[in-house]
Image 1 (cartoon, protein in one colour):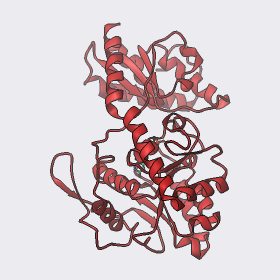
Image 2: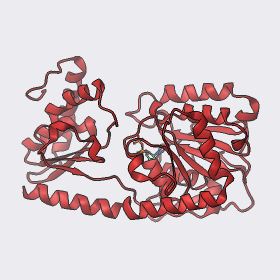
Image 3: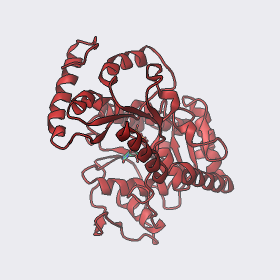
Image 4: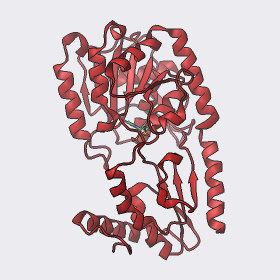
Length: 377
Ligand code: UDP
């Protein structure tokens, strides 16, 4: 059933309403009157009224947003607004993403954060990180490698067992070659293809480096319908590269069957990078940036969306004013590769920045305070 005031009557809107109704039936068995429930993102907006009818207070948390308002954003809000009208509170990652129609309503701005003890972010010995990279084919084995093992959340020992589901790589990066890394979903807005093209067109500054574009298995993220096409485009570009570039560029799709194993691989890949890039054409917040900054890596990232909140250019990383400017991307990426002092200074600034503002204790306190307000209202 579509909510009152909803003007969207197309098949897509009817399908959305039907899926939300089915999901609500499952969810309601776990919800009691007086509970406070947080729903995340547009996918779950249609659950608000179902949960409220069961006596729950509902917070809607929006993780997405764009820097520019245009016809698309207006249409998206026109679709979502009737579903969201009655929510008890709203949370956004950036004040800039709050739409005008929420003026006067209970809105909190809570920046995302990372868990420094999670498999994705916890400290990892260089010998383990290096072993994990050689296990998945992104590094030649080195004498100093330890075993590709890690402690799992339940205390048992895990071993990296699964191979990447897809790889484009013609050689193993030597153990001492500087690695430029971007870890992202295969989404057009992450511009993996743009990173590859900029790397291929770069002048001599990146000749000694290797590039690793790393994303999830293309069937591994259910709400990512474009991933297969985007990976195929990157693979086609890779095949067309000149030999001297192709032997230094590597694409890998990580297995997603075991979330902890996947997170450990991401941890090792980010930690082993000489430079981490996030050349997104648009970005909601950009947790991969936070993750790499926490690992003390020099990060080069587009000055858009939440990335602007995370770093100040020159202090905590390198901000790219125009993410479509591939020549500037390549030139700026080569600076921390060539200048170890700069790389160390940016990495140290990045880690400090995350410690001061983007760890989960700060987010927990903000959320607790919001839950208290919502429960009392
Ligand atoms: N990620 C992952 N495996 C991958 C690629 C990405 O676990 O193969 C994780 C990444 O470490 C980060 C998240 O997915 O925690 C992506 O969040 P981000 O905010 O950067 O972008 P989004 O994908 O939400 O647009």
